[in-house]
Length: 323
Image (tube, rainbow, N blue to C red):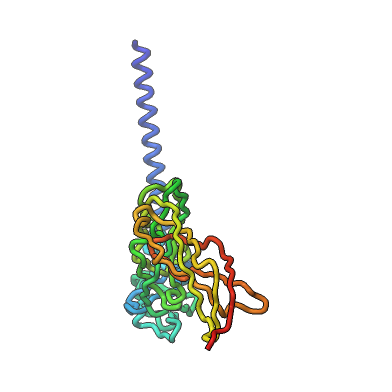
């Protein structure tokens, strides 16, 4: 028991000695650091120029940071903060010269402001480069259409009533005029759908280019919607009309009707009538090389998704009219 107590006392003494050593080591380091910070140094630091007071109807074309290298001299204490924080200098663009394409930052015109950026204990030795160009453009706003990209696989007997659409169908784009004017539309990210048998309403992200950081979009996503119903196939016999027959000729043809195969929703099927379709043959298409009358479906109801003619051969006889 006595040996154990002696061992504990020995450990406590050694611990105290270690703490004293660490304390003296820290104090020695602190004194050395304070001594170094009291010395005068000359350093070249990179400062980022932060644009301010740019006109509301103007925008910088490039968002890449513009920097200058400033060589400064001063006590270590005064220079320390520029190593801790990101060095920046505000630039008042209302005080810069410009032409139709660029603002001009020059060391000569901005030297006094840069010197005033630092406290009196710091001396500015040099600035490099002495000139920087800031390309700018007029701020432009434009409405552009949203194009929907959907890869849909429908369940048997189902289809879209109307094409997929975006809600909203357009967005507002804002940015440099030279860039905005070249853009007329924006696409959605592709939406893949399988075995679709019900209405579609999905939120989809717009495919915004990663290089368009100079542009601002009013929306990042849109809703892709589509009305889905059961569809079926049907047919009607439609009278054929021959157009552009010369007044001095009579054209007799057979058959007088042609079958139109159509594809429509079950809801619209019963309202579809042969009178909703129109089929014509143009007499002017008859030539020495072409002796066939080619029927063309020139009208179909909006409720029909697709329609096609069944059979396209006609027999005809052309005779002159009797006066």
